[in-house]
Length: 423
Ligand SMILES: NC(=O)c1ccc[n+]([C@@H]2O[C@H](COP(=O)([O-])OP(=O)(O)OC[C@H]3O[C@@H](n4cnc5c(N)ncnc54)[C@H](O)[C@@H]3O)[C@@H](O)[C@H]2O)c1
Image 1: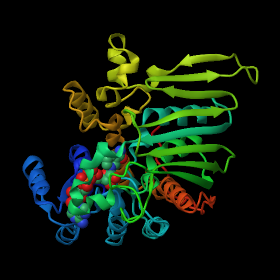
Image 2: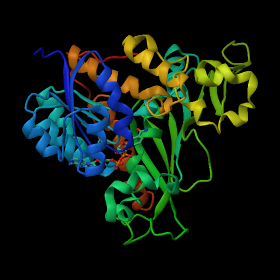
Image 3: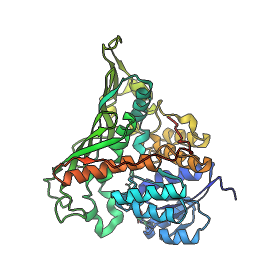
Image 4: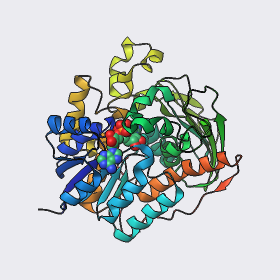
């Protein structure tokens, strides 16, 4: 059996791993997929529908499938750190759903293990490949915006809208729903940090004390004694830029939930409202002042195809218009079979796999290519640590009366390994 193929055991079968499973199964460099799921109903469903070997627990899967070289962690958000550490200690490459962990210690232990073992670690952060993030990374690298001075990104998801994703915790669900928003802060952090292209150096965060009283937020109510349903962090970056990150769980808003509102540079500005994306160039450094609508570079193909028929404002309300690929995404880097899969799902308007702007394809392919080519994925342990620590430290600031927290040195990946970059 070739070492240059991925043999992966996936732990956790809620809706998020199901939207990755078929992609792993179809990838030409994946030769084996098995799974583990504690809940009987979910385990049987996967066995019957996808015909893969399933185990009840992660431990059992690791024990009975010694030839696995990789694991995929899709358990509840606060459980990832220990499962990732266990996987790395068992000698497996790790793909994980966000976040990488919920404590500073977990993050640094993972970094240490990845560094010592040389195993591949990739965090499947969907927002890293959201079209607005790719667009800003590209244009900022090209110098279109000049020096970035300030940027804003957010993840808005009202808590009552995703109670279902806590069902798997059974009677513990009510103590987990109120997790501090910033402990799941990688959506906003990844978009802003990767666009600005610099590392955070300090962070201050304010929390909104929830007033609804429906049993999710407050002292003694959840496992974190967390009173905050919304948190806003201000970050200072090494390159001098300032960032604002919002992680809101009580908000009357609509999808898309993760987006960059604006990035402001000395030469130009990116701003977004709904489905309209504008690049504005200032009358500075001899440039021609201009405001250009770049929406067709960023919106999904589905939205662009229907553009003449819909009110662009209403387009934001339709889930179809933020699923599937967009022109700014580098789809040519994907194996043909995955590109065809996206097209088929888009045609039949089956949104599961192609949700989150089709980013599951890029995240899976990053991991598989990194393992097979022995290179580092774009969201490697060091990048994932920065995205994850931003949220962890923001929460630490919020619970300590908005104290400014210095960001620890995360370091850099080993220089002898190339970092894949498919932007
Ligand atoms: N855009 C995104 O990046 C995005 C979107 C949705 C969810 N997520 C992340 O994906 C993860 C999964 O989300 P979900 O909604 O599918 O969650 P879920 O709670 O519905 O599913 C998790 C499953 O893991 C199983 N599990 C936990 N520990 C296990 C073990 N040791 N052995 C076997 N099974 C185990 C549970 O029984 C449960 O069924 C979450 O961490 C969430 O943070 C990310």
